[in-house]
Length: 176
Image 1 (cartoon, rainbow, N blue to C red):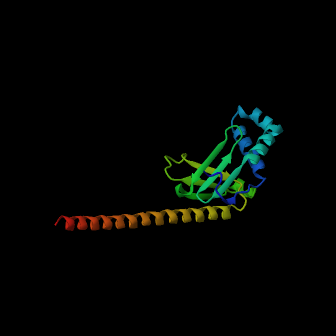
Image 2: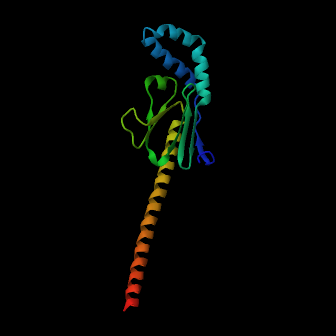
Image 3: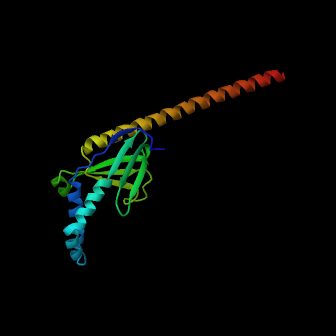
């Protein structure tokens, strides 16, 4: 279905994301006492390998009706989000992200049960402001198309009601 859809824009990711991933995981490992030995192993090579492969697997494209996201190594997430379900794309730059000239885009969708519910985070999208604006513009186009379709359905329903009323009158006149 979405495999053959024309791509409007493909997100490119900043290679600095690899360094961010290494430091992000390192920070969590150092916080825990048991994680300190793992943090050393992480910095000695495992982190570089993981961050490189994670970066290579990052994929995000915008098609006419969907936003498709794919990421992860051990646990791969491949998600296709219909544009009409996207509520907002939140742009976030914290001090660490800003230091590396990175930004996080959080895709918020309709029907989220709670704050940790149905959302995706993309870190390191190059020209993230442009990507965000393009996705939101395409979402509006899809919503406008859906609105015009529902208006057409309402017009068709009204026309069918008028036809049915005319047929009832014709039938009543034929009975006389």
